[in-house]
Amino acid sequence: MFWWLYYATSPCKNFSELPLVMWLQGGPGGSSTGFGNFEEIGPLDSTLKPRKTTWLQSASLLFVDNPVGTGFSYVKKDGTYARDLATVASDMMVLLESFFNCRPEFQTVPFYIFSESYGGKMAAGIALELHKAIQEGTIKCNFSGVALGDSWISPVDSVLSWGPYLYSMSLLDDQGLAEVSQVAEQVLDAVNKGLYKEATQLWGQAEMVVEQNTDGVNFYNILTKSAPMSAMKSSLEFTQSHLVHLYQRHVRHLNQDNLSQLMNGPIRAKLKIIPEDCSWGGQAESVFLNMEGDFMKPAISIVDELLEAGVNVTVYNGQLDLIVDTMGQEAWVRKLKWADLPKFTQLKWQPLYRDPQSSQTAAFVKSYKNLAFYWILKAGHMVPSDQGDMALKMMKLVTGQE
Image (cartoon, rainbow, N blue to C red; front, side, top):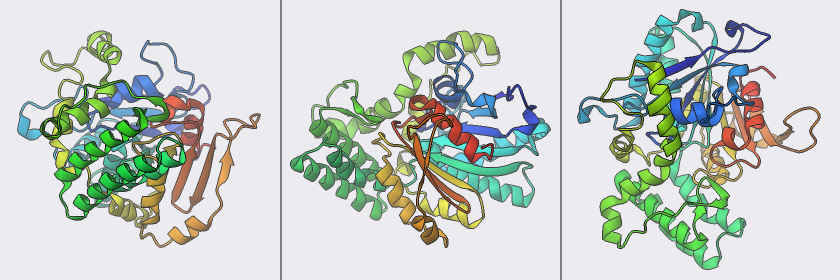
């Protein structure tokens, strides 16, 4: 499994005085070392120009290409791809044990896991296993919290909220709302019956219904339109290739051409450690396809376990995201069995601003004990890309630097 570490570059503090943040991308099959690094929070953008809002100024950054087969991580046999969250978490424990052993200077530094999209679901499972490993003494690190960004924690709650959200934003009429809600109920029925592969297929159909009724709204930012994709000619064709279609929509854009050229060109040459038969993103489709049976499974109970164990959990979401819209996130949070949820719910949220001089609200936050929720305004699915200043401020707040 491939990882990329940056030591914090604050002019005022040594790296040992700042937290270590591990970033996990979504997909599954999206590369943290590529997209998260060069498109969101790393020190350079994809044109290798400095990023003003890099998180490196306030934390050391660890990007990991997971599950195996993602980015520069690779497998030699098809049977070794991860097929469920348990395997993803188990593989990460092997990496983290090795990492903290070979980088003992980070064993006492506060360690946080930040994530995005499906990466949030993986982050929840990884965080729980890491907490257990620390309790058992197999991994030495100062685990301080997990942040779930626009995270696929409860897929069905997201799908059920698409219709009402789009309707409230004038992107569906009454007929469109009825059609989207109908297929969303089919997704719910499949999930309730434990038919998760069927639920994944129905999720793809729900997206098609949304596209048809919204003139191609962008699932990652409702203020824009998606790039046209080749239409499926029949329901049979969709059934046969729905997974590839979904991969193309939700993972391939994370491995866009300019990023692929950068990673497989200058970056690969600079690293000098990538095997000749391994290309960045070359196995991403296989990663996605192998997780089909796990994709629509909820992870709410895992978040509950984290909260009950005293692990700090942060949920954050972009206002303009559709694929994992805020309404869906709020819905699964309300389902938590955490004893302090009623007190959290009764709190009034507080506004946040990018800096003390700004009068424009950039976000809202609600926090009680070890649960926090950030509503990030004017951001879509990729919060750091859309609102870099606010994302950086949020990271500082979560890690106790503000």
